[in-house]
Amino acid sequence: MFVRYDSITDAPALMNTTVSFLSDPQYGKSLLLFVLSPPGIPFDAADIARNLYGKREVTIDPITFPGLAPKNGFRFTDVALHWPDFLGLAFEHSDHALFYIPGKMKFQEIRKENLLQQNPDLYAYSFYRLTCPSYVPEEAAVTESVPPAVPARESEASENRLHSARAALASLLDAGWSAYAVAKTSGINPVTIGNLQHDRQKSVTDRVHDRLVTLKKDFEAGTVALPERKKRGTAPKRGTAPKESTAPKRGTAPKETAHVSRRSASPPSNVRSVPADPRYLSVD
Image 1 (cartoon, helix red, strand yellow):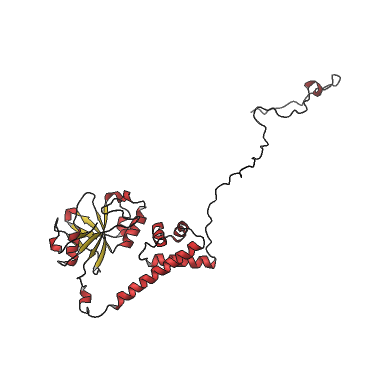
Image 2 (tube, rainbow, N blue to C red):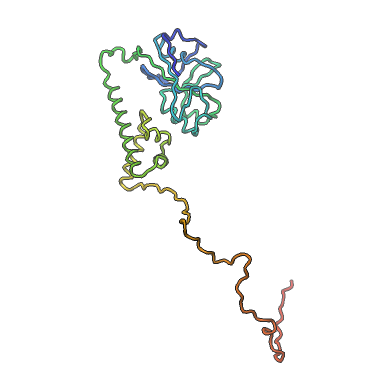
């Protein structure tokens, strides 16, 4: 799904809304937003673009993520993730998270910590990428003619971090680790491990990179052992008879044993029996 407006003023204005951030937002020509809203309440992403980029030309692209966001305006029941894992990935892939408040006609930035205790079924979720090629941040407007050296270094560092994380994961998989074992041992979300394994992850955080590299070093040093996979019980080989049970089969009588008749066991008639000692019971 793709939406483009020749001018942000040509976009349909459903409401005159505002956008409020918790602190001074830092964004450039491209911005990825995670938007939460009450289910069934419409809003216009162009209102967000109008607040951030003014009257400049803006491309609004509703996007999806494999295993995280199957469509735009989806519900929590559409994803197979636990609530904390879902929030962790959503905030990891977005620059800012905004909650739409219909009564105030306002988009308010919200923290992940404030959402952890909420009921996920109370919201609908969307991801938007806003792109404004003509936008120049105010702090960079004065030195626009000077090539920005810092963003280039940051981009190179991000690529090196991603390459290092992939190499560490590939080394563990080649050594016999499964993707599930790596995720469980390192504490990284299995969706992130799967995206790295199949080259669908475009960037990684310092946390994901450091945990994968540390796990690889610990495994090579012998401080972490390769998890053993559980083996199921083996069935008897074809053509071999099962061992016979030593218990007697049903319906068969046990082997005869020597029985002593009561007559042979009773004492001879000429032998006087000795009376047994009387038993005494204690009486209160």
